[in-house]
Amino acid sequence: MPPESEDPLPSLTASRVVVVAGKGGVGKTTVTAVIARAAANVGRRVLVVELDGKPILDQLLPGIEVRH
Image (cartoon, rainbow, N blue to C red):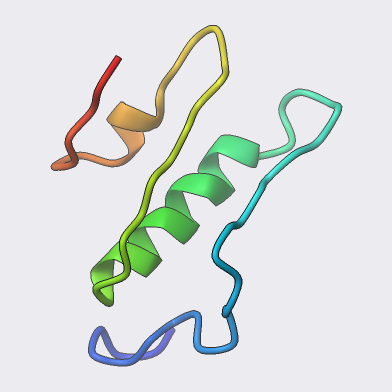
């Protein structure tokens, strides 16, 4: 992993990242949390929308503002 001062997502130029899979239990929430935290750590603005009936992203991303 690069040092914190370096952008861990240097080639990510998209304005949106969507994580979707039809099957449950494949790591969508974990992947989303990791991407969101990495982007926020380098100063990118991040909005995460969780549509799961049992939301847990607020537990995976401590220190963020959560609106329900």
